[in-house]
Image (tube, rainbow over the protein chains, first blue to last red):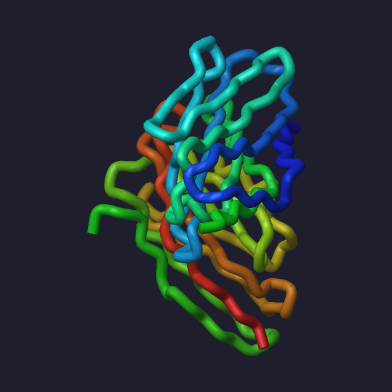
Length: 113
Length: 115
């Protein structure tokens, strides 16, 4: 079964600095999708960024970018110029085909002003 | 509204009672997921509906839990004889397709408290 591991339960960063959240996953497949979701205190899960495994180019969405290392099964999220509104739980997730969406345990990110 | 709607937002029930949690997905979305999130924890998969396929029930923790999706739209998660360990936030999500090509949109969840 596919598993997703986030080894950092908590992270903190100074406002305007850069932070990287780690994620590793286990799969024997070659075609799949990876996601980072953000969950602020409101509980609303919001998609931050998505990566297709067959695309070598790392996905980027404004201040958010990923470092996708397919061979190493690593999928880290980099947040540049951190803002107070970035404070939230961040979840890494994996999906292959029509199978279920599998989540990691999450990383709580704190932004220090 | 255009988003995923869950009701009730909060539910307090007595141990041993049955509860029903409702999820209204975005219209036209073929995939629907239920997850459970205990306080400060990750998302525990419960069940996944995809079109007319048999649902993936592999995450249901016990036979006290069941879910159905009527007419490919609204879904109800039922917990029978609730226990205190059932207390959690129950999240529903839907996506247009079952693949990762389309984004999964989440509702705001139902916070269940068993006393």
